[in-house]
Length: 84
Image 1 (cartoon, rainbow, N blue to C red):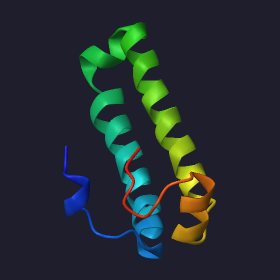
Image 2: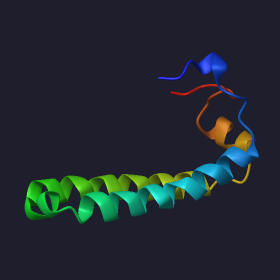
Image 3: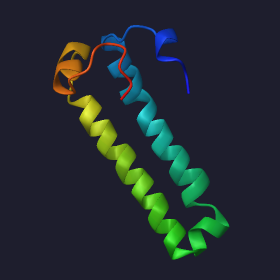
Image 4: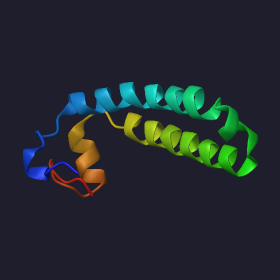
Protein backbone atom coordinates (compact mmCIF):
# COMPACT_ATOMS: atom_id res chain seq x y z
CA UNK A 1 0.00 0.00 0.00
CA UNK A 2 1.07 3.53 -0.68
CA UNK A 3 1.77 5.76 2.31
CA UNK A 4 -1.22 8.17 2.60
CA UNK A 5 1.21 10.97 3.49
CA UNK A 6 2.86 10.52 0.09
CA UNK A 7 -0.46 10.79 -1.75
CA UNK A 8 -1.22 14.09 -3.51
CA UNK A 9 -4.08 16.27 -2.28
CA UNK A 10 -7.31 15.25 -3.93
CA UNK A 11 -8.81 17.58 -6.53
CA UNK A 12 -11.67 17.57 -9.05
CA UNK A 13 -9.44 16.05 -11.73
CA UNK A 14 -9.18 12.89 -9.64
CA UNK A 15 -12.90 12.30 -10.19
CA UNK A 16 -12.47 12.61 -13.95
CA UNK A 17 -9.43 10.35 -13.86
CA UNK A 18 -11.23 7.65 -11.83
CA UNK A 19 -14.27 7.78 -14.12
CA UNK A 20 -11.92 7.47 -17.08
CA UNK A 21 -10.01 4.47 -15.67
CA UNK A 22 -12.92 2.40 -14.39
CA UNK A 23 -14.30 1.47 -17.83
CA UNK A 24 -10.78 0.43 -18.84
CA UNK A 25 -10.69 -1.86 -15.80
CA UNK A 26 -14.10 -3.28 -16.77
CA UNK A 27 -12.92 -4.03 -20.30
CA UNK A 28 -9.76 -5.64 -18.95
CA UNK A 29 -11.75 -7.88 -16.60
CA UNK A 30 -14.10 -8.90 -19.41
CA UNK A 31 -11.51 -9.43 -22.13
CA UNK A 32 -8.72 -11.05 -20.14
CA UNK A 33 -10.61 -12.81 -17.37
CA UNK A 34 -14.15 -13.26 -18.66
CA UNK A 35 -12.90 -14.61 -21.98
CA UNK A 36 -10.21 -16.84 -20.48
CA UNK A 37 -10.83 -20.49 -21.46
CA UNK A 38 -10.54 -21.87 -17.92
CA UNK A 39 -12.29 -19.04 -16.11
CA UNK A 40 -15.09 -19.08 -18.67
CA UNK A 41 -15.75 -22.83 -18.22
CA UNK A 42 -16.27 -22.93 -14.45
CA UNK A 43 -19.60 -21.35 -13.43
CA UNK A 44 -18.30 -20.33 -10.00
CA UNK A 45 -15.38 -18.47 -11.61
CA UNK A 46 -17.68 -16.82 -14.14
CA UNK A 47 -19.94 -15.71 -11.31
CA UNK A 48 -17.01 -14.18 -9.44
CA UNK A 49 -15.87 -12.32 -12.55
CA UNK A 50 -19.42 -11.02 -13.05
CA UNK A 51 -19.40 -9.74 -9.46
CA UNK A 52 -16.14 -7.88 -10.12
CA UNK A 53 -17.68 -6.23 -13.18
CA UNK A 54 -20.78 -5.28 -11.18
CA UNK A 55 -18.70 -3.74 -8.40
CA UNK A 56 -16.59 -1.73 -10.87
CA UNK A 57 -19.75 -0.54 -12.63
CA UNK A 58 -21.33 0.53 -9.35
CA UNK A 59 -18.14 2.33 -8.37
CA UNK A 60 -18.18 4.14 -11.72
CA UNK A 61 -21.75 5.29 -11.03
CA UNK A 62 -20.96 6.42 -7.48
CA UNK A 63 -17.86 8.38 -8.39
CA UNK A 64 -19.46 9.80 -11.53
CA UNK A 65 -22.33 11.21 -9.49
CA UNK A 66 -19.98 13.80 -7.95
CA UNK A 67 -19.00 16.98 -9.74
CA UNK A 68 -16.45 18.16 -7.22
CA UNK A 69 -14.04 16.55 -4.80
CA UNK A 70 -15.60 18.72 -2.10
CA UNK A 71 -18.99 17.02 -2.63
CA UNK A 72 -17.37 13.60 -2.48
CA UNK A 73 -15.33 14.29 0.66
CA UNK A 74 -18.38 15.71 2.45
CA UNK A 75 -20.58 12.78 1.38
CA UNK A 76 -18.03 10.23 2.58
CA UNK A 77 -17.03 12.27 5.66
CA UNK A 78 -13.37 12.27 4.77
CA UNK A 79 -10.64 14.81 4.39
CA UNK A 80 -8.71 15.16 1.15
CA UNK A 81 -6.10 12.54 2.03
CA UNK A 82 -8.27 9.85 3.67
CA UNK A 83 -8.13 6.48 1.94
CA UNK A 84 -10.70 4.57 4.03
